Length: 112
Length: 112
Image 1: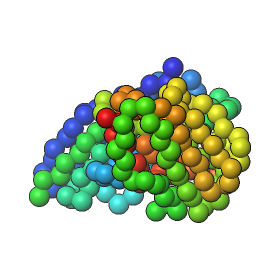
Image 2: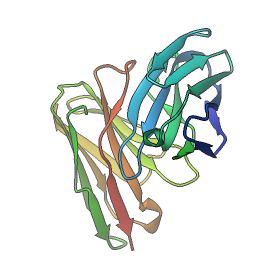
Image 3: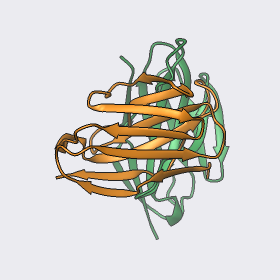
Image 4: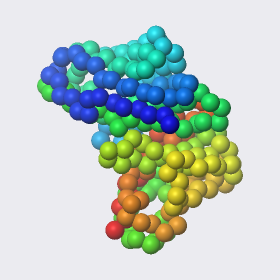
């Protein structure tokens, strides 16, 4: 069974204080690992897809990296508007498996 | 935002009543999904559709049925709502089963 564990559950940072969020996963062959951002009362907003170990992607203050067992979402010099819950999900490589398995998220708060 | 709308956005109903949630997309994507999101759980797949009249079960499908008579609309029905179905329901779309899923704004359902 595919599993995704995110840590920490919650993280409070001062504005400008860089940190990383962790997503550990087990999956029967990884097709893709996805990062989403979710604001309160809204649907998840797509950020990145990573496909293979060693891959990195960046968007503004966010950089996502991938190893064979985990992914990190690095946040550099965050601003209050980066406050949100960040969700990680995996999709298995076996044909016919369209399901995304999600973690429970990391709730990030950036204090001005 | 991807062109996805959900209706209603909020609903309160009583145990035993039927409820239908609607997802409408303007992207002409082939795949549509229904997820539920509950505290302490990641998003969990209820049902998905891979074309008009083509649907399949997800991991938490008991008590739910779906229908898709047009590419743009995907309906989720609770035949007889129970309190355990109180949740936030998200629709997602993708242009294939192996591509990024984009989420709608969600429907908050409360079953009393």
